[in-house]
Amino acid sequence: MLARRGVVKTPFRGRIMPPVSFDYHEPTSVREAVELAARFGADARFLAGGTDLLIQIRRGQLRLRHVVSLHGVPGLDAIEVDGAVTLGARVTHRRLERAPQLGGGLQALIESAQVVGGHQIRNVATVGGNIVNASPAADVVPALLALDAEVTCLGPGGERTRPLDGFATAPGVTACRPDELLTRVRFRPLPPHSATAFLKAGRRRAMEISLVCVAVRLTLDASRERCLEARIALGAVAPTTVRARAAERGLQGQALTAQAAREAGRMAAGEIRPISDVRASARYRTLLVATLVERALARCGERIRRTA
Amino acid sequence: MTTLALSLTINGATHEVVVPPHRTLLDVLRNELGLTGTKENCLEAECGVCTVLLDGVAVNACIVLAAQCRGREVTTIEGLAAGGELHPLQRAFIDRGAVQCGYCIPGVILAAKAYLDEVAAPSADEVREALAGNLCRCTGYQKIVEAILSVTETR
Image (cartoon, rainbow over all chains, first blue to last red):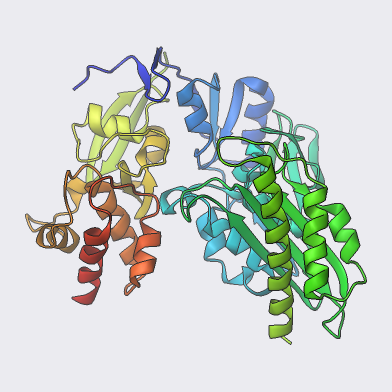
């Protein structure tokens, strides 16, 4: 029964590695968590849902001396709606899916949370983890980008709040420093006549990393015909999640016709440089962007007009 | 190597273990406590064979550190039968022939239990979605879904 003690098998790589252990810390306040991070720097990582971190550790991709669990830190798992919406970093995908406050115009957030992994993953994986893991194929991040979200990090020097747009700088890299803790993400309420939508393409419908995902926020004028403002955010088409700014600008002031939605999709496809990988070719990803942007815009239009 | 003395509540019983912090709940269940009903396979939270309930919520035990389970309730497949009586889901899986090799079944049953605790009368599609994180290589899922639905119908 104990034969494997002392080695960690990595079944998909066929390598046997020595056990990689670490010191485990359970701070009971945000302040204490940040102090630990400041003390250990790059030797430490925060642990929330563990769906990325613990796998990276077991694979030997990440060797840490310290793991700082956020499980016992209060105040990081609240969903607050006071006009603006604030999501604590430890809010799980499960909570997003089931948050009645996030219905209506914020539908894209729920739609993006619903398609991440299976229930076991969504029960533990967090919004903060999705942001700081900085996968180019993150699903919830494009929905938050479409909502012009801001993120707040707490470090030894106090809090820093900045736009989520640009926060991820490369795959797995963000502007959050090792001695900082991402504590919350916040966005303002949507203007009138607004809606959001999220669409994801995968090879199958569940437990799939996005080939491409698209989140759109659309605001129409009072007549619900003309586009006042659009946000188009894309996943899995660049080293980070990105916005399609040319397509956003192109929609401004336009009547939201089928033609305009198609043109926006075409523009979005023109401003990305996706890679070909095991999941899809660059050409297929480009085609998906054109189609999904068009559909997401149409869906937003329907949603705005339905709630007239 | 540092070790942690952990007091874990598993299926209502308290267990004391001393393990290094990197040991997962799955590892401790199987290799320290001999609770081998929880299966081990991908170790990457993809396949669901290690599904257990943590405070009633389905999680993959391969990506939960044992240390994270202090003060929480863990339920494994061994804890589902009460007083020698199989859980209705276990009974239904046997009656409906929903088990072939059986390796995925502990995880499937626990995922189904957590889902039915939340949604009393789901559709077949909803049951399939609830099992998205549980891979079965034998059955094609049809009899699994039938077995789960049969429990909801008899409630």
